[in-house]
Length: 249
Image (cartoon, rainbow, N blue to C red; front, side, top):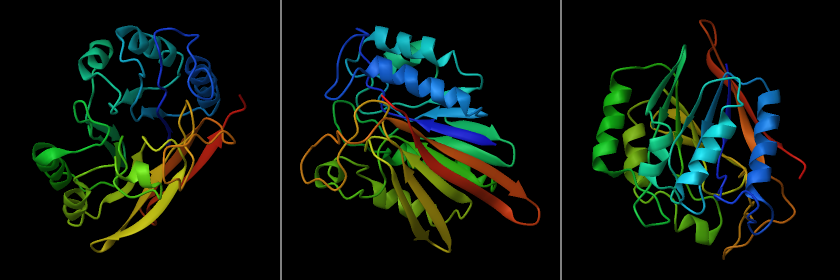
């Protein structure tokens, strides 16, 4: 199964509006065209759909996503207005991927750039993992790890310690995908008796400079997406390959 992650489109109601390093609507369309050419089985959009928090920006996103030839799912980022977003398309927290499954978490905190899961969602996550031991991929907006940029690490997932303590009891969690950081990232972490692979994704809009102490745009980088090819067999169990693709703008 081929799953593709896209993230951080930061769309405006005005399709001609510029970001710091480009035109988000134009880049959004270019990324979607490239994604479609990859023939994915599913696309997951890990938040910050909108920049201006307008109803029109979500409507534009849904209209464009209709061009995909596969099912797609989204979750909110810190820039998103959940009511406007879900008025266009509902948020689901679990997707069956046959031998695998995908859990989508909402890390948005009203009015804040940082993220949090909260005790209720953590309890729900534990219940989901308790009832099904299939290999699991988790998607969220905020990084549950430090990515190395001081300013970004301050606005990541605030209750990450509780999140990792929970996962230590569920070795079926193999992969975590996040957005928010606007850059490619990969880390492998020992959690309990298992290893969890954590991946960040380039934004569809501006890219952020890795390892920066203060906010900075990476003008040398380009928008992109992450491909995750998931496999499972009786002999080898769960396996996957993942890589980043970028587009010319």
